[in-house]
Length: 168
Image 1 (cartoon, rainbow, N blue to C red):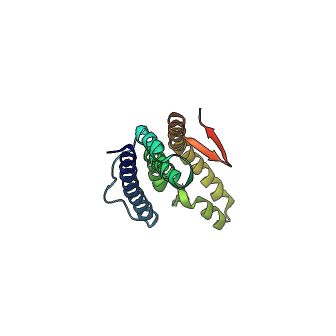
Image 2 (image 1 turned 90 degrees about the vertical axis):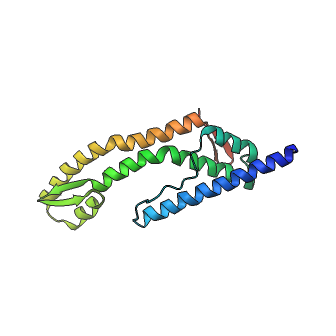
Image 3 (image 1 turned 45 degrees about the horizontal axis):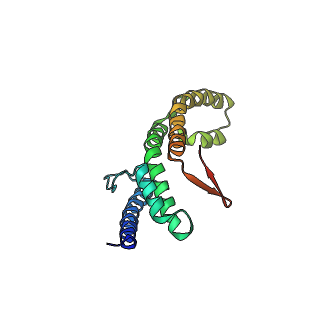
């Protein structure tokens, strides 16, 4: 098998694998957006940094073929960060502030404030929300920390306005 044929085979295999990964990721995203719980995990498998580098060498980072590399980078980052984000989202979904014997879900705090004219109730809600935010802050911090850790360790090339910047 010639080098050209071997490279073509590698590109074909990665294209198929990334397509399957992307389809499953998008299917899961749509399912979660529509309010359905994820009932199965058909993920084609984890991707590590060596895989991203292999894709980079097979496809390059420029032009149409470079899109495959950036899709691999996207999948790699999401696979490392989403578990932390899922924990935050789970806690946020269950978080409720108690105001005048009424539970106000965390996601509805702003709407509740806009619809309530009672300043004392708003003040009570503010105290409750401060406590919730103090509890949720470490989970949010962990998501960002995971993203920065992946970015720094992966040395991902970011293309901005025609300039290539490398994370240290």
